[in-house]
Length: 437
Image (cartoon, rainbow, N blue to C red; front, side, top):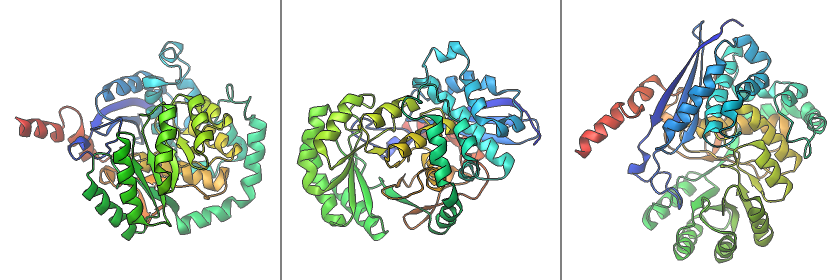
């Protein structure tokens, strides 16, 4: 494969989702979904597109981190990327002065994720496969070699991970065929944003049931009485046979999280997502013990595999909500999938946002084919906005994701959308400013 990375382009993309309160929750009242967007340009015209996700102000900081890290991508050949993607990721992280800003967390990690995700898009396009298929076709040893094991081997050794992957190897072809035929199950959050009034909540729940959804998530954590009323309305609409999940987006202390769960238990809650600080392993473990059999779901703000290791080892995570754009890209996501499978914890990735649905579908599908080998209790979050801006948007059949077929990571945003939503000079923002005046 020919070509060398010769330039790294960055774009500050922001979508004014705060206008309709799409994405609103108890912590984030009016987000403008945004992407710190990266394009790796090669001297043969092949491009790799990637991004990390933010919710508006501060997107420029993630973009600056991606620019700083992306300089180390220049000069890498496409053949080198394909042969050693894990080595490329570790090369990006090897600048000790940039690493000091994390290490492997915060804004610097968001920038790393954007560049690594762009590299995997480039890899998929170079070999002519979607990223889920690139990963699913790797040998167990190649997958193990993607992972930096320094801080993980006390919980999962590379030898144990290799044995687990080899055990799954004989069923890969059968699971892949089933995936192509049936797709991957999803749940919807589109009905449950906290900024929606009761009438809109009821209407959207009814529409979700009519569309075939059997798992719906509501945002909670503002006022307990309001949450009791909203969960009661939702349960009445969806009936007893569907799963209802709740998400507090980190707003509660441990004791309040337990109190919330007790008040909402009559509505048969399947999981309680991000009940407290996303970094507090001890609090999540205490909550998990107190509210069982309701599961604690968390991980969308866990910034690296070491955090996931601690949550899983402590029994603090009953559902692993891996994000595709917060840890350091695909390589670190593979590490998290291996850790979750070793602890027999289902992975239900965090999605929505800008393009997170497009990215995480690849991770879940690879997980099913090659890592966990099961879809039991596993779902991908689905939110029905912003897909129209992507060159390879998610494809749904009913309430299931269909596997992507186009080469790459499904990360490319259309050129027209990149121009319109570039901040602050794109037409979506200049027209808004003109309207406001």
